Length: 521
Image 1 (cartoon, one colour):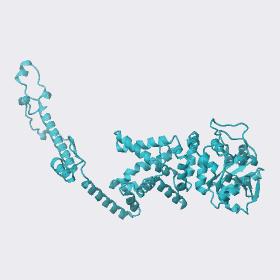
Image 2: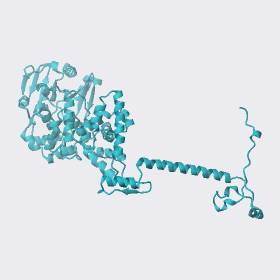
Image 3: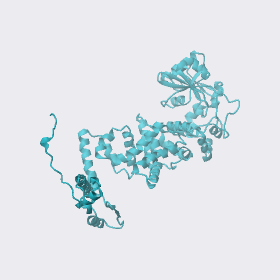
């Protein structure tokens, strides 16, 4: 073990967050040992800004709970930890671990429980990588190095504490962690690690909880190093274990989305990791839409059902939460509405909660020469930069352009109200025009004719109803009825124009309205 002075390594307590200093001070004053450990110390030595800090102590979780009271929450069954809150920040506090007395593992060697407490000398052996095994005590100004971790950091090398195959079997998620560190820190993996990362070993990831794998992909997609990470996932066979329905090919769309995500994170902009899931699953989604439409499902229903089916299959590998699912589906379902919007719906589309994400998705598709965007990505990009008057003018121009395109569309099918006549695919455009003019009406003329026929049918029904009302009056009894003694039934008289319509009928007499009492006004 080496005890190094923190000041010589460039470590200063002012670089630490107030939350971690508060927790370390509280534990030290309570009589326990407490250190900063893990990636926080490593990033400080590399001159990076740590995303968070983790603490380790010789206090058990129950003792940590007694020190911090309501500020502490115990979590985990496999690895029991304490989450301690200091203001709005949360610090993860672990207890020194020792080798288990008896192995608690599955048949494949994955550790199912590791809650045996020990001292700091035993704890560093339980850690995975040497670069994460530095212990920093800011109050004492000391850094403890048990395994030449500082040398590996200077050499930019990733090494395991122990045999890589055994450490991967104990926790298969370490395969994702080693790739993440290699991409983030631009370190080289040790040769023994590269040899251990085989397709057969990668299948161990299928034994890990989908919820834990989703949490790990969140770190991978939101770290700002997607561009170098994706080729490593393909090279070391972990891509099919996380994305079974996505072809293991780095397409131009995925590459462009990864670069755009890294740029946004580097510039300090926020991202939603679910957006990259929408990019990855886009091709399986389109394939499912095509299958459903081939089965006769309407286009709108096919897009809705395809999103449900694709995300349901992905749940077997990474448990995407419900709110992220809704985010992804809304991005997909807004694509056709943004490509072929109705002019009157354009102002309301911009106000939708997912418009910005759907627009970014469409714009990325257009940048990689997706032929189905019809140039609408650039149109929406320009539209958002206009003021209200200019937007109204842009909508009017867009509406005129849509009407012009509809008139100029080549006729693929000539339809009548009674039959559909298919067009010969070998016919020229002139032949199609002649056939269209000679045989059938245009769509607008056909609609006018249908409305005219409906109006005429309504007039005929009204006239027939009036004739029936006239015939349903009292009539003179015929000779046949008089001889039989039957009373005439005025409701059975045949309508005007039939053979029985010549029967004598009584004429209606005009009513003397002067004798009618209308009531007080």
